[in-house]
Length: 249
Image 1 (cartoon, helix red, strand yellow):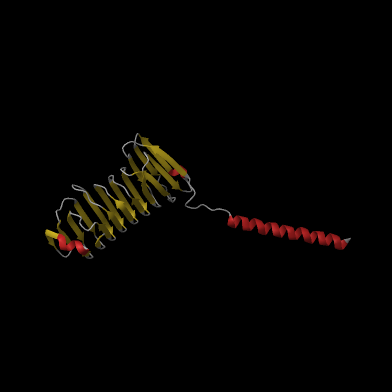
Image 2 (cartoon, helix red, strand yellow):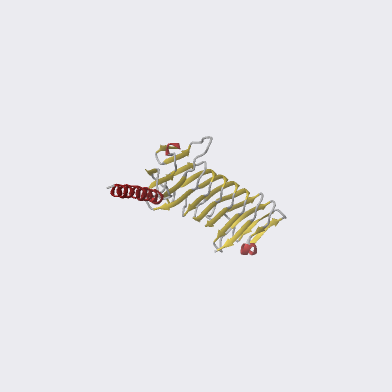
């Protein structure tokens, strides 16, 4: 009888251990908060492409385009209450409230191709793909990637970080890319025409094959200016501590 009770007791202990182990494994394998989970999800109908302004504190901002007449804003954050929104017709403003210890917020945004953007970020990268509307970007610490851009107006200012631009220039357009500390890397079609003003105060400027088509300007140890082919679009590239590099495609 005693042996039978001891056996039952041992079975109970074993079952508890197995249950505890199974619980631990379940917790370890349980889905965690990943970039696929969404804490803030909005869709705003707009006319004429609309205008979107996003002001972030820390985290990445990614913007791509679609053929819908609406703006989709999704964000990942532990504190969605920090995100404030203001809607005035087709003018959408999204702002992350500042606090003593910033909470990371990653934005994934989709806008009409012709939408205009105003993006600002303190800490984090900004990525914009396939847009034709005006783009204004301000960043403190982070890289800016602009890919497939066909806008007639572009203004990017970065304090610390690289700027990458791959797109097209339009007649009469204005394109200003400036970073205090970082590289400015520009890729344009081989036959692009533009008026160039490039300044690199501490590093070198490499215009690649575009240098052969540059005329009527001047060159110094810290800057190059001139007209490429027919001229037209104004391309201003500035870095105070970094390189200016141009490629053709």
